[in-house]
Length: 187
View 1 (cartoon, one colour):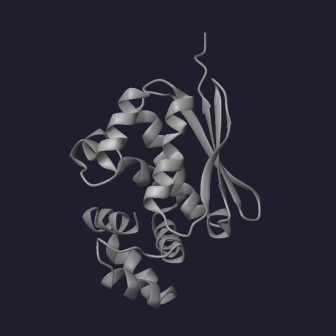
View 2 (cartoon, helix red, strand yellow; view 1 turned 60 degrees about the horizontal axis):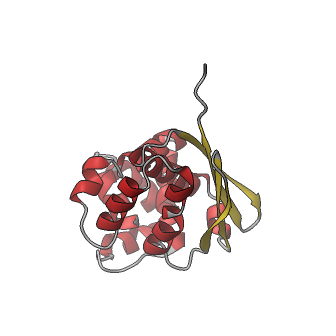
């Protein structure tokens, strides 16, 4: 996930400013990102440092939008590897069903993170779903990582044809909740 995010920054010509910020604020993380392979993992700390540097450069709203744009129809249509095919299948099969689409979240979290807590479905009904990440103080304290997570949630719901608003917050020290609430059509 982190290396794909870095590739997106490079592609969109945002990397030089983010790289300069990391060089000034966190040179060890920058070195790790420079030498990480596509088949390896970077730590949650390094992922969060990259997200925070990006947020400092482009802002939280732009980071959320960038995160969502990485997972559009074209991206998952061309995605291979372990994430693309299941994500394509589930967003089609669960189209329009907020509760079933929410179950994609824990799978995606397990597939893309290591040593970053566990995501579970904490609540679900027809109009609202709560996904909870526990045992990850770093996520709970990082507005930048929360913006990335919210953007990813926005994209999964949009791919599944569900109009919902997503809010991410931390009700406790090591807990983060992503709350998706179906938008009600005004009459």
